[in-house]
Amino acid sequence: MTGDMGLDAIATLCTGKIERRTEGTDKLIVMGGLRINVRGTVYERDAVLCLNQRDGYSTKLYLSARVPHGGTHSPNWNNDLYYVLGKPWHSWSWKDVPANQSPAAILADHLEAFR
Image (cartoon, rainbow, N blue to C red; front, side, top):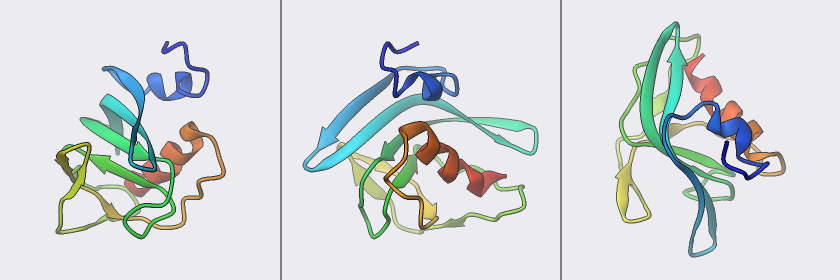
């Protein structure tokens, strides 16, 4: 448990530390060891969830490394790396995840790309 009611649901999906951060006007959640289930195989990646508009998306999830697809969707990985908090991150084209919901709901909507 993080002690942050908004992050406790996310904490159940992570093996590492979770913290709120900002970078300029961006509101971020940094997650250590986010577990992503793709058809029964669990991949663990560090991740950053941006809770506001960035890089042309209403919200965005960045991962430390790509995750193989295998679900009903096939993530369209962007070829460029994104720099957040001074580090390079991978992401895919996944639009229309609205910012007007809880951080856990935003994360769940982004993870739909792997289902």
